[in-house]
Length: 332
Image 1: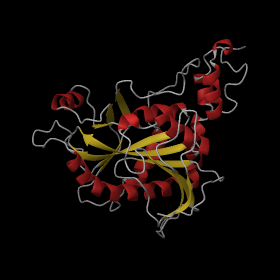
Image 2: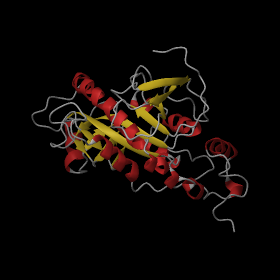
Image 3: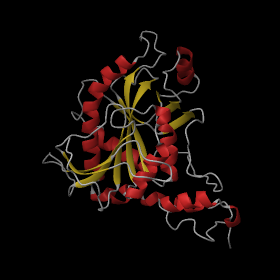
Image 4: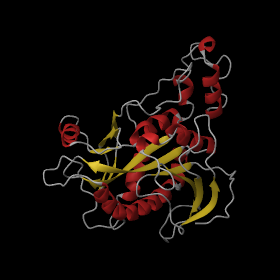
């Protein structure tokens, strides 16, 4: 690991990768480290890990990316995977990335499969989520005197998910003869850190019709929406959870065995995705133009007289100028 990198970076960074189990770093080459930012202080604490700033230059001559692409990388569970799902400082993670200038986030997560056709080592670009957490994790930037209601009907950015699928669903890109990218699916996010009981797994599969299960999609996706980020998640299947009649009980050993293989494909996926997002036609998508200023209306419902001072100060840090004096959607 390079230790003499700058600890500051002032150039624009629009794209971030949030790495989960099996993707804790990005290789050099093709990713060139530019800086390592110590976990910055936010009004919601510090993020899970330092934020790595890297430049990606395509190695293939066939690449259509016009120039090197600068990205940020954050390890969701910490550099040493020391944070359990319920301990991840999701508010700080998302806030730190937005403050850096990030407007487009591609998240990776290990998942259990709830469908026969989603085999271990397959990838799923999920389009829906069921929140089965228990309210232990802070899930909003709006509280204590500021109310915000954001639309969440489509929790993962459809435009970004389409670009991701186009980038990674290509012949011979990934390892494994039977590897498949599934372009949609419903993920159910459970509290953890224990894996599902067999009864729970069957319920998620048969009653809720979920495709995959993890412990990380919520509140990350909700906070990304509040922060006006284009956000999508790539789910890397490691097992059949506990429902499968021929499947042994899911264990860490089983998960990590498949994750070793998945990590190779995850890195290939990141390269392909960055090449795709680096194309000129995706400039507005990467800048999150379609989400810009959305929260001004969604978060401006509280009348000026009722706004909590601390809450307003926190939001001013995250959204400078959005909720200043008199900026209420009901005024006028």
